[in-house]
Amino acid sequence: MTATDLHELSLGALASAIQRGEISAVETARHYLDRIGRHDAAIHAYLHVDAEGALAEAAMVDRARARGEALGPLAGVPIALKDNLCTRGVPTTCASRILEGYVPPYDATVVQRLRDAGAVILGKLNLDEFAMGSSNENSAFGPARNPYALDRTPGGSSGGAAAATAARLAAGTLGSDTGGSVRQPGAYCGVTALKPGYGRVSRHGLIAFASSLDQVGPIARSARDAARLLRVIAGADVRDATCVDHPADDYEAACGRDVRGLRVGVVRDTLGAGTAPAVSAAVEAGIARLAGLGCQVHDIELPHARYSLSVYYVVASAEASSNLARFDGMRYGLRVRGDDMRDTYRKTRAAGFGAEVKRRVMLGTYALSAGYYDAFYLKAQKVRTLIRQDYARAFERCDAIVTPTAPTPAFRLGEKTHDPLVMYMQDIFTLPPSVAGVPAISTPCGVSPDGLPIGLQIVAPFLHEARLLQIADAFERAGEVMPLPPLTEVAHRSGAS
Amino acid sequence: MAAAKITLDDVRHVARLAALDFSDDELPRFGDQLGAIVAHIAELDTVDTRGVEPTSHPLDVSAPLRQDLVVPSLRRAEVLTVAPAQARGGFAVPKVLEVAPPGAPEDSGTTSGTS
Image (cartoon, rainbow over all chains, first blue to last red; front, side, top):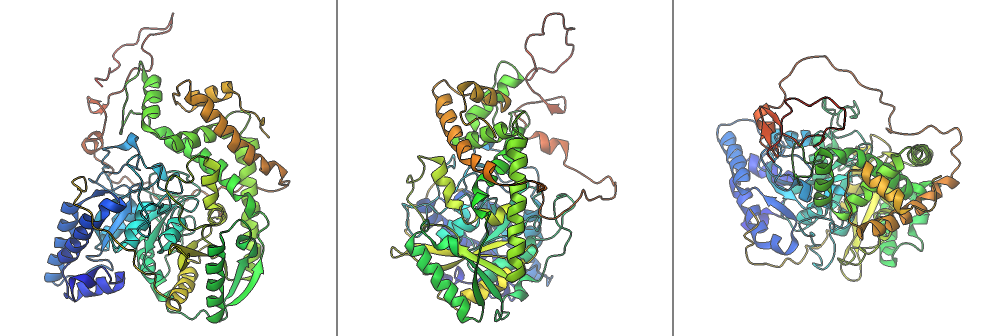
């Protein structure tokens, strides 16, 4: 096996090669760290690279192997994490000045599970501040860029995670998805990205944005790779009372199963005027591919899905305003000293939060304030029930639902920052499954005439992540592999440590 | 639903609740953007939700219980390493009020943070 092959190995193949002793974990880590050193300056997927930690973890795996110990399913596999996941001893900033320099004293549950499986953590990935955004342009430390076109967004908020996965700067990554933040960047960067159903994966240690919507999700180069990551992180956690008490399925076993006879519902509305022609064309071709695999395709409607954007912006902002109250300069993070405690809160938050975060905190505070709670928050939660019911009804007649993941391919940096509402529209197809709490995946289904990746979103009923992976895997194997992004080598950036 | 127009006073009030300081030129811009978003959200008023229960969790999970066992938590020293200021094993924070209101009893022994 040559060095150039190493980053082309799937997660499963890499883990097997390390298990068999064909390559060492240290060699694998060095290979990925070297790639980061050469290519990340142009992409800025990483906010922090933990070379020392990664090599130490890799060495531990090699020693365990030499002693003949049993190795975990991700032993030696280099993974990187969105920087809103707490990593003990490793800076965690949420791409915000208010947490600049913050080093958590604990690991998120999903991080602990990755470590227990033997994964090597390469570092922390760029995102929109506090996961609020759809382009990674809201990062306080500069945007990440799309490896397929460096003047374009990788999507958001898990832009760094999707970009790193596409550019092979990690074997797989974890992002988080609240309204589309794993799926949309997955689509823009041509990789597979899964949002589990709500409660499938523990949120302990995921720095909270919207507590009734947030989910940690894997971003990987294939459904099969995503399946292995999900298997490791899924399952109830005593530290997260919102987890569903349902054991994780064997997601990898679901890959490879025949999809013949599965009923697929197409939301015809999503292929109309609001969607770029290149996207509609690629998605139609994707639907034809599913039909070719033996799926029974028919049109369906989700009558209340169009209200998802409004529901989301009320619910998510309201919950964010509550969750972000903890950033007050008292116990961690930035402190800007004021005349007294409250003045310190105000000055700290004014200095520490970016504009989008402030906007959502304001919107959420407004929606929850006296006199407005019923009109906004309660009303939105009721419309949310109607959207949930639309899905439940649709799933009586189909096993999975497909739409485009995003209405356009990746847009240019700066193109949509002038108007918040315009940016919010990027999530128009990913929002309904988020609001309903059901699992959804984005898988690459083609490229635009400019060579920009396009994603197909598949949605399944609650607790049916295995079915999503089964369909995505069959779909991927029946199509062409996404061409690698053309990577530029830029001189070593001294900040990448 | 709410008033279609958000006044500058509304924005100031919300900023106070949210513990956010805005400069005089920032405030109108935030007010306008907020107003535009709220105007869009008003479409929810047109949806008939009579008899519909609100959703907060897709599954009806009522508060799960666990055994009331004492298990190790975070160690104090580790937690305090990230504190902006610490004193006597705790977080040192600015006084709630710098000046006691007239007639209030004198505050004794509150830690004054050296931040």
